[in-house]
Image (cartoon, rainbow, N blue to C red; front, top):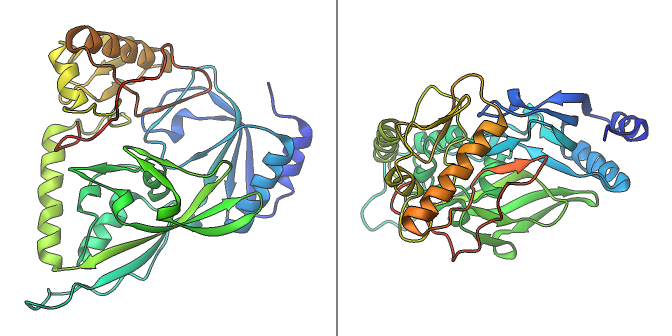
Length: 334
C-alpha cells in the first residue's frame, strides 16, 4: 500500500530529514536485489531521528533501519513501510588515542573508552583501533557492515563478538535519546535484542591498549585468512545462515554438494558455500530458491536445520524459522 500523503507531509516537516518516495532498495544492499520501499528517510542527527520516529509511531507504520545493507534481502515486490538511514554525520570516532609502542612488563592493563557513530563502517573502525594500538576488535577485521548493524546483530568471528567490547549504546526512540548499558540488553549469538522502536545512533566500546605493530599484524593475518576463504569482488551479503552448534554452516552446505549450484542469476559460492553470489541479474526469488534448497539438503544429509543470518524484508520466508537448539560460532566464520 503506498504511503499516505499525510505521512509524507509529516516526515517532510521534520527538520533534517530527507525523503524519497518509492525508493529502489537494491542499490542500498550488498547483494543488489529487491524492489522498492514505500519511503526512504535519511536523518541528519539524533534530534531528526527522534522526530522521524515520533511521526512513524503516530502513524503506526512499520519501519526498519538500513545500515550498510550487508545482511538484508528485500522482497522483489518491495517493502511496505519506511526505511530509515543514518546520514554521513553518524560516521565519526571520538576518543581514539595516539598510537602506542607497547606496555612495559608488569604494567597495569589500560582500558580505553571510544565513542563511535552508528553509521561508521565496522571494518574501518577496527582498522583505526588497531592503528592506535587498541586491542579487542581484531575479530571485526574485514567484517562488512556498520557499527550500528554490528551491534544489532552482535557481529562476531573467531569466538569473539561485539557483546564483549560494547559498554553502552545510544538509542533514539520516539520519546528521546538515551544511553543504555550493555548489561541491560539481552545478547545472543548474532543478536542483540534492542528495545522496540529503538534506533542505534552511537556506541561506546571499551578496548585495551596494546602494541600497535602486533595488533596490526593480527589484523593482516585475519584479512589474509578471510581473503583466501571467502569470495571477493562479487555481490554477496556474507554468511547466509548462522553456524549451528558444533560446526560451520558452510561445511554442511558443501558436504551436501551444493557449491556452485545456481538458480537464475544466483549461485552458491564456489569459494565458501555459506555465501550466495549475485552473478549480475539475480532476483530475491533466485536467492530464496537457493536458500530453500540449501536448507532442505542440509537437513536431509546432516539432520541439521539451518537458521538464516540474513533478514528478509517485505514478505515471509518460504519456511518456518528454525526451532533447533542454540546457535554458536565454531572457530572461524562458518
